[in-house]
Image (cartoon, rainbow, N blue to C red; front, side):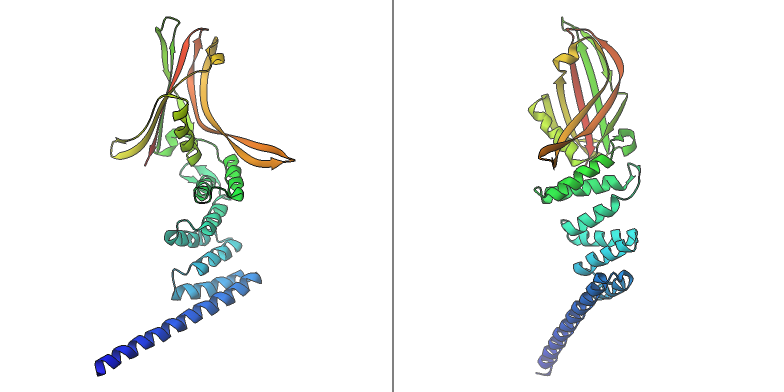
Length: 287
């Protein structure tokens, strides 16, 4: 009987403790919110930190503390708090937007150190979650204007691009095969969707997973015939793939944005009128 009473008392003490902690967390969150409204961000950070000592995964405290850190320009701490929220809730739009907004202000020093590119990729992820959100679309499109394509050689093997231009004469005899001498790519979901769409207007289209060394890659392969005006006598020196995205309206007119996704340079060749010119494209993305 004594053992039963001890267990019951222990459970009741535990319940009272949880309620007390819950009330303390709520009160501290509320006082921190008032400090935030009064723009007393350092004091608010201290209050939210108290909450997180009690409940380390408290989403409200992490989100608000991240905002407070951003207000005092402690971007590293702000990003860390947003990342902690996303670790438990990867589709939290508030945390995604906050993290992207901060990263968009960074410099783009290289492929592996480019805040604007990370911001762009986050906005693309947000559109996967909420595809009809016009505000997110506008922010994503703006970030496309801030991020150029990257030299494939700078991506540390994350992307591989092989493009060939093949020319045959009127009799079908092979005239030349040239390969790209330099390529760049936009490492974004828009590029992937663009490559997926090539299935509709290409020849011998393939999308598959292959292994190169120890790594798995998605491989897109497709062949396209050059358009008629490109068959006239001329020099080829480059090729690129672009996509047009809608960017809202201005004075009742639909606005659009043309984005370069894949760009390749070639040694210039002379193509005679009547020649048959084909482009063979292979693009690999590490999984």
